[in-house]
Amino acid sequence: MRLRYAMVCSSNQNRSMEAHFLLKRQGFDVSSYGTGAHVKLPGPSLREPNVYNFGTPYKQMFEELRRKDPELYKRNGILPMLKRNSAVKLAPQRWQENAADGYFDVVFTFEEKVFDMVLEDLHNRDHILMKTVLVINLEVKDNHEEAAIGARLTLDLCQEIDAVESWEDCIDDIVAGFEKQHQRKLLYSISFY
Image (cartoon, rainbow, N blue to C red; front, side, top):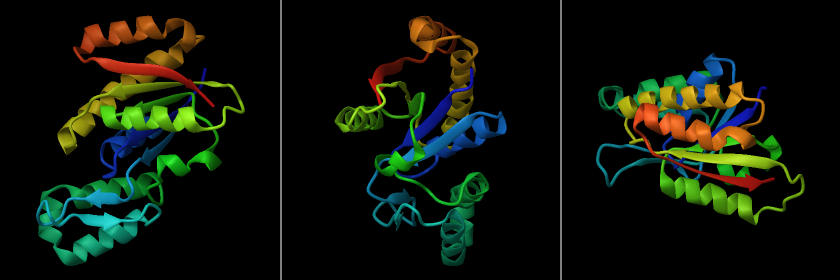
C-alpha cells in the first residue's frame, strides 16, 4: 500500500528536507514543510541568522549566501544543504498553509514542539474527510550528521508502515519494534482530516 508522507520541522529546512530527499529517492510519495514564521538559516553568529520568507527559492538563498561568505556557508554545511534542497523542490513551504496539498496518511516531526504544533493545527481544522492521519515524532538533533541518521531511521519506519495492510491495526507493534531495535522513543498520535 502506498501512503502519502509529510516531513515537518521547525524553520531551518535541514531535518525534514534530508528525510524528504532520502524518501523521494526510494520512491515514496513525500512532501516537506516548516512550521516557523520564517525560514531561519545560521549566519555569522547566533544573533545574525539569515531569515527568508517561505516560498523563497532555495537557489536564491544559495546564491545570496554564496555571495555573502562562501567559505563560512560551505564550512557550516549550509550551501551543500541548500543545493540538496533545490534538487528536491523549488522552495520551502509552511505546514500551516499546506491545505492545497490535500491530505497525508503519515506526518513525521523531528522535535516535540513541532509534533504539538502539527497536532494542534490538525485539531483546529475542519474535519471534512474524516480520514485518519498518523503523526509521529522522532526526536532528531538539528545538525547535518543527526539529520542523516534521522532520515535513515525515518525511511526504516516508513518501510515498516508501508508494508502492512492497515497501519491503524499494527501501529503499536510497529512502534514497539522500532523503539526496541533502535533504542529511540517515539511519540505518536492519530488525528483526522
